Length: 99
Image (cartoon, rainbow, N blue to C red; front, top):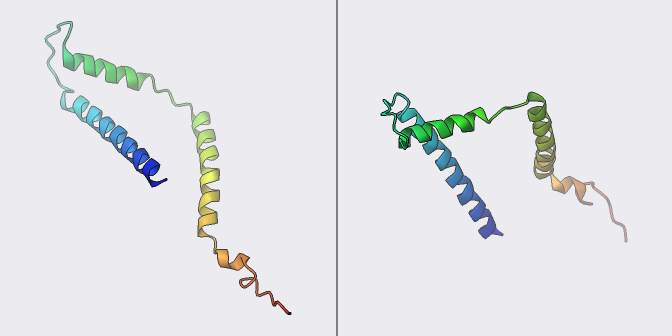
């Protein structure tokens, strides 16, 4: 179980680092003076990054629905984790057992 969690964390960290490095690469070369060759690596990176950003078209209704669908189970999970479990036992309810 912990092995799967560790693998998930490692993948998430790798994706986050790659996104940060992509943004840094773009911002470092934002004022790049191109030689206008066909295989200019910086221009290829900038055009790819621009295509990725242009393809992102957030629809506010879909974003709100997604947030509501995700936040409801998360709130329920957190409520169950925070709630005092002792109150739900017989001792917590102060039930007297008579023999």
